[in-house]
Length: 133
Image 1 (cartoon, helix red, strand yellow):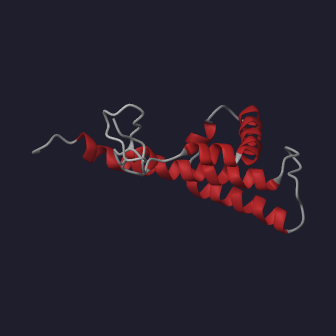
Image 2 (cartoon, one colour):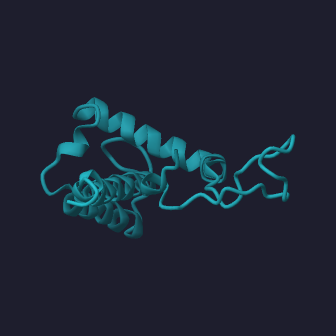
Image 3 (cartoon, rainbow, N blue to C red):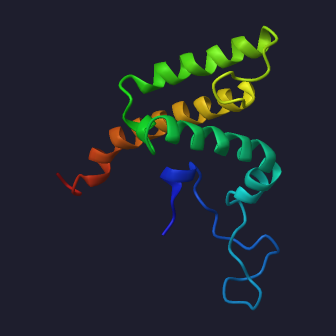
């Protein structure tokens, strides 16, 4: 089962080395997303963002950010506040002692996830509609 709605890409069922699907050593992953490039390449940044998420969960609740009213706008504002602090020469957040840049990244991810959830929810009725109705 493919997951184009989650990753935003339609997998190409082809082996990158030209092997047939039933040939030994074939792996039909040409054109598919390579999450290791992001997760491994940004390991330090993702660990910093993880610390922000853990700090926020301890301060508020686990995953409570998903329920914040008008979350897209509020996390955009929070992201911009951290950006402004950093640009004004304040490198670390006084509350968490973490980099403002890490807070900015966390807020950007929260906003992006809320946008993606909204778009998936909007597309759900069409996906659930029975053919011919």
